[in-house]
Length: 262
Image 1 (cartoon, helix red, strand yellow):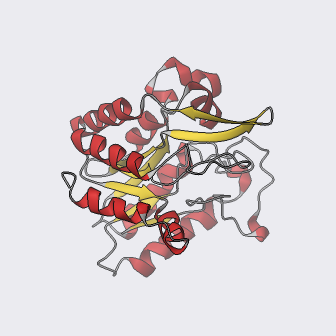
Image 2 (cartoon, helix red, strand yellow):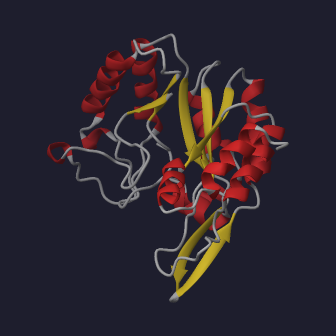
Image 3 (cartoon, one colour):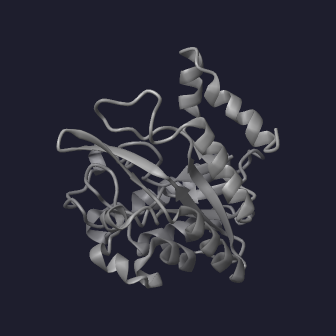
């Protein structure tokens, strides 16, 4: 089990900040900056969470925030490297026995990569300092884990029509950063592999066009061939909901994942 610690977790709206601590940070800015006043409370939360659960053997690693270096959520906030570095230090001090994970959303397509980047258009320069994978890797120690989020197809509505955008670089990007991390004595996991549809908010297709069970099998098989031993799936609750609705096709995917030759 991976436990995420900090103020930003998986699932919309991602940032979970108590109203009494809600900062006046403008949209698109660093919510981890000193003037936001969150450094002390966040570090206290990281320490308290790890202290509470570090005795549980089921916990294999601590994930520090969720995509902290990416802009996301309704206000497109991000958490700057200075606070992330302090969170990592706090987590390591509180439990030096487990690896730490930093995950990133990246390599989808140019438009979404720029939108999710705190560096804006500079993200396209290809420099490590402007890529969330490179930034996260630089913050980690040997033995820690760079986490990649792999989404292959996302639906949206534009001009009143359902549209889909796809990533053509997800497999090559995953392979490249696994090699980069290994050269530094660091690990790479897929901490979110798309395993449910990401359909437009209106006029959803049935069957979905963004992700189907066979796509999940293809994603996991490709990542295994790229050398990934740890691939965590995002969206298994969708499988259970479909089972309740009488559709067991998603759950049957598990059999193929256990036995790729089956």
